[in-house]
Length: 117
Image (cartoon, rainbow, N blue to C red; front, side, top):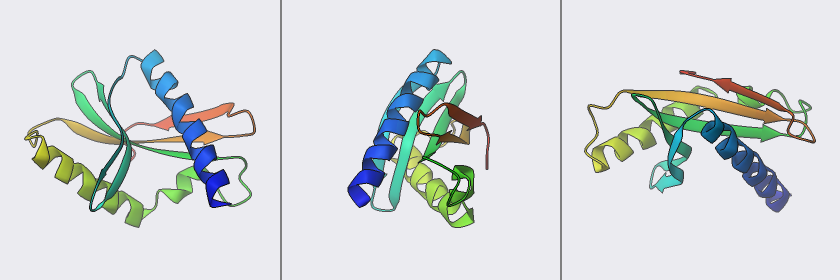
C-alpha cells in the first residue's frame, strides 16, 4: 500500500512539474529535505520564491486532497522553508506557500492555490 501511495504521489508531482513550467515557473528544487521534513517543490515565480506542497488522490473517498494540508503540516512546511532560506542566505526573499491538489484516475483535476497559507 505504501509503495502504491508513493507511486501515485510521484506521478502527481511529475504532472505538477510540467504544469508549473507551462505557467512560467522555474523549478529550483524537487523533494527538498532537511532534518525537519520535506518540501515537494521549490520554484521561482516572478519575484517570489514559492514553496509548494503537492497532494495527489485518486478520489475524494478519504477527503479532499487540500484538506491534508492542515495546520500541523503548514507549520512543518514553514519550518523546513525557514531552514532552507537560512542555509541559502535568502532570508530577505519574497516568499509564498502554494498548495496544488491533483485528483482523479487520469489526474484531470488540478487545483493550484497560490498563497494558500
